[in-house]
Image (cartoon, rainbow, N blue to C red; front, side):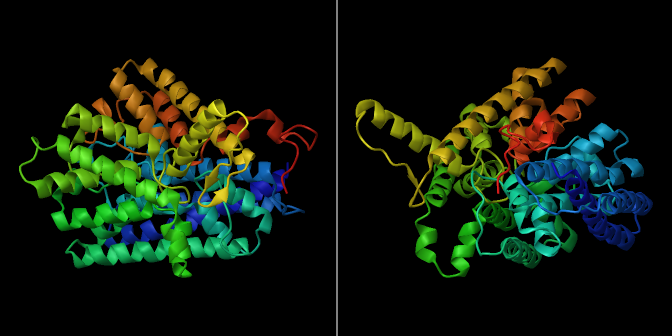
Amino acid sequence: MNRRMVLYTVGLIILLEGALLLLPLLVALLYGNDCTVAILLSIAVAAVLGGGAVLLARPKSKRIYAREGFAITALAWLSLSAVGALPFFLSGQIPNFADAFFETVSGFTTTGASILDPASLNTMEKGLLFWRSFTHWIGGMGVLVLLTAFLPGLSERSIHILRAEMPGPTMGKFVPKLRDTAKLLYLIYFVMTAVMFCILMISGLPAFDSAIFTFGAAGTGGFTINSAGLSALTAAQQWIITVFMLLFGVNFNLYYLMLIRRFRSTLRSTELWAYFGIFAAATALVCIDLTTVYGSFSEILRHSAFQVSSIMTTTGYSTANFDLWPNFSKAILFILMFIGGCAGSTAGGLKVSRLVLLIKNCHAQFRRTLHPRSVNVLRFEGKKVEEEVQSGVVMYFLFYIFCIFGIFFFVSLDGYDLTTSLSASVTCFNNVGPGLGAVGPAANFSLFSDAATLLLSFAMLLGRLEIWPILILLYPATWRHRGKSAIGKETK
């Protein structure tokens, strides 16, 4: 383990976070907020911790292998969340550090679950509201991707960092140089963010509100700025957010293919068609179920499409209290919490690509049972799926189920009803945001004990980083010297 490189890179991440805190500081100064001092102190802490780590580590070798990549990713996200919680804690807006940590983890992991009473958002200072939602945008594409894109000092072997941070079963490069790939990702991300912000401004939404809702949709997060949430927006503005939530849930590889005019390759994407097919089917079923809830078809379609888009992309915004909807609609939304968006997007969940691969794998197993001597080649996106990828998807799914039930088991010790405990575990692990029952869209997560709050924070990190980085960080063999163990064999 190259411990110096791990510490050095985590130090750079903390310094980057200190630089990013300058934006909410500017907003706080612009609005004359009292939280200015708290943000300044947080920047100072980030400078001391990050600068100290960079100066003390000074690695002789900057090579990064698989386990360094996983360790850097896990430690970076934990450090980001701890330092990012300081503005809320030091300002007194969230006086309990466990709650402040939960809120910040929820922001960076683009979950959108909150411990804040919706009414308290009306009095929260603009600088903190901006930082709270800006964490969505930072975490959406990944802060380590940002670091790789703009810091020339990182080795090409930082592909291991991107593999650990980017969601989905595979992580490839668009172009030969990894740094150029990271730049392209952020260029696409930034342009789409800017377009959405401009469209919301044109629709009549104030600049600050437009920025907040854009950060939430782009990062598929879900934090809002007042107790009314998105229900106060016009129908046109809700449709704009619906469309962009769906777009940010698409694999960013496909946007790159469109940029280089490979439209046929884009349209032949199995994952893309499955993604939009699930959205269309779920929206249609919810529409049918809501015919007795709303008066007009346009209202039914708008609420159905918005909520399906929000839950499927794990954004977590809501235009209505869907916890009051009929059970069939709630069941559909609960299932969508598991599925999530596409691999290589800012969405959370299991991912559509994994779902497709699991279904294809089951189909192949049936064929092998019926025709033992037949040769079954599993293909996805026109390419043969290697046995290693197939077993990796199955293994991930097993850990995925195990983690959700493990988290649910311990959260249930708080004594709340089954619906609340299970949906809280599922929605946090899948980075969705609102759940059902006492953690529904009209409620919050403040009811849980500090222990359960920290566990749910851990669940959000597990889900966003797709299990392995956090678990490998806790695995003792990760920190041993290179040997002959499975973890010790470095992937080059």
